Image (tube, rainbow, N blue to C red; front, side, top):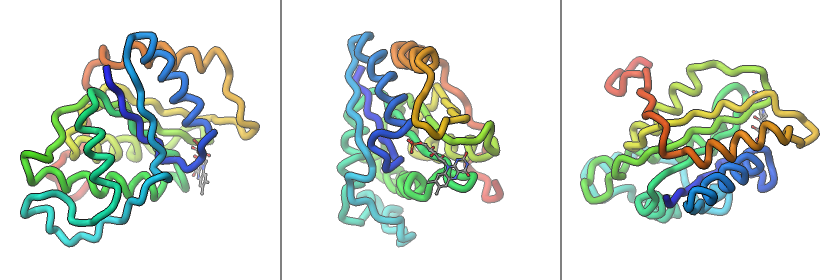
Length: 193
Ligand SMILES: Cc1cc2nc3c(=O)[nH]c(=O)nc-3n(C[C@H](O)[C@H](O)[C@H](O)COP(=O)(O)O)c2cc1C
């Protein structure tokens, strides 16, 4: 299985990366590959709400977004990671999701149904469940079928994750394809979320 991971935390050696590394071990143990991209390495602009995408042809912004989307289209599985900043996903993470709908108006660009893992990292004991639901919904807008959600909180400030906990992520990486698709609970057609 060919996996593509997009890390939207700018921290190259942060918690997210440590956990992704363990997922990668599991993916490789199951004869798969995992290409890991840091969004920070790419030039991705904000959606300008020009709505040109509604005429087909994708997003008109000339940046690296389409490059990442091409890689996603070539992958069998997508991992999207987002850190929590001020009780919501980071602006940088949202910036990517805001551009997702632009592919939906052109059959040649629409992402084939792709299973996905959503990973949220934060320091708190818990976060508002709406944040996870809404991020799940945003991924569904891009045709992703989320089949695993990792809500990873209680991260320690000393940068260490417990070894026993990290080993669990290797197992999850191994089993990625096997999880059942999780239906999102927010109505995609509803204007009032
Ligand atoms: C600007 C900023 C705001 C943050 N706000 C929160 C918060 O509201 N709740 C929380 O639990 N953690 C918060 N954090 C901690 C991050 O969620 C945490 O450092 C991050 O998820 C760890 O992942 P990383 O090491 O891969 O970046 C914040 C961090 C930053 C930089």
